[in-house]
Length: 488
Ligand code: URA
Picture 1 (cartoon, protein in one colour):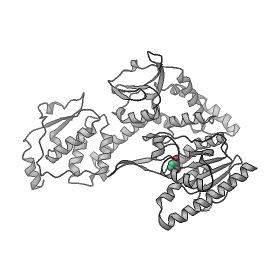
Picture 2: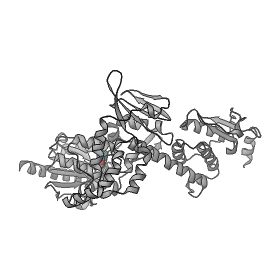
Picture 3: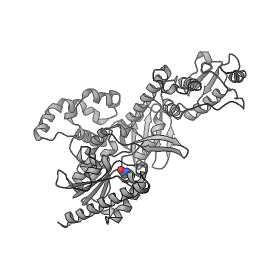
């Protein structure tokens, strides 16, 4: 230890152990503030015991000091990387009582080994990574497998109640997700770790509940069962993967899970019938746009749905002659629940107008239904940075955009950018090569391909002017072709 550090340690009472109580089990800010203070006062990790409500500091710390030392005024600020903080925010939600200590020990070690976090062979780093993974999985499972059951309150109004048993302290973390996704419903989520209650305007927290507090069945279960049976695809049946995704623990809360044994048993026969009919697919296509909208909100077929986002449905008239397909909703679209309302949408509107295309007469949608992003803290605050979907994610999600197309039945589809083009064609094409010409689709309609407006937004100067010129030319050709097709 350095000499100044030795000096600072002088005021830490020799042999003193500190007990740090946290207000809540998921109290990241509390842990961070106390950890910073302990670090600045040079209190080594083995002198600190962290406690959470309902937990204990252990015998060793029964006589620990609850008044933390005040750091010297000249104590340097701790070094903390963004990466460590991001991991810490997730790990705090883990149910292991040791998490606070491991985090503090890592923080302590990071002061002299700033690159420690990159050392995947280090025991603490490995443990933190495992814990973060387990928490993320739990967050995802809650979003994918929680099921509301309809009840009536004392005034006869609908109130939906769900029972869920999380492994970790993820309830509060997931609150925003459920509020956004079920904003118009009145609901309660009951768990053994606490409860959430949403009345359409205000979210309240309540004490832990038991399973007996939750209803066990209602009419809505038939709908869930029907939906699940329709998306159940025998051709893709992989029992191991299915059990991993939907562990038995969740089955009792999920009406559709009770059908799994029967569906598995009938799968081979059903597959044979489907093969004969040449229609192996992800199930039957939804028949209405409303059914697609409902289904995409429940869709957890790829990890993008694991993120804190909301599915965004296409909008526009059924029977629109033109369907415009983008890549995926952005930050604004995710918040407003509508496609192309952010900066790329505004630029698109300008160019559509220039080409004489009335957006209101088109059906506007995306090939991927959820916003894929990575969280980032910048000087301007927290931001969600767009991430492109992988080819696999596009291929999984194209089921929905294809279902929309089957209902809207446009004469011409305009794909904006490479992801949208892949979504429509099922293969990757180069925009440069594919633009400016019609590509026939299976139902006799035509696909036209152009650049994505976000691409234009990222350029400037002469490069932007050139790309705008090409974009305008593509839209003008689409407008021309559309008038031919609609006049015919
Ligand atoms: N980018 C897209 O591809 N779609 C939107 O809805 C918004 C931005």
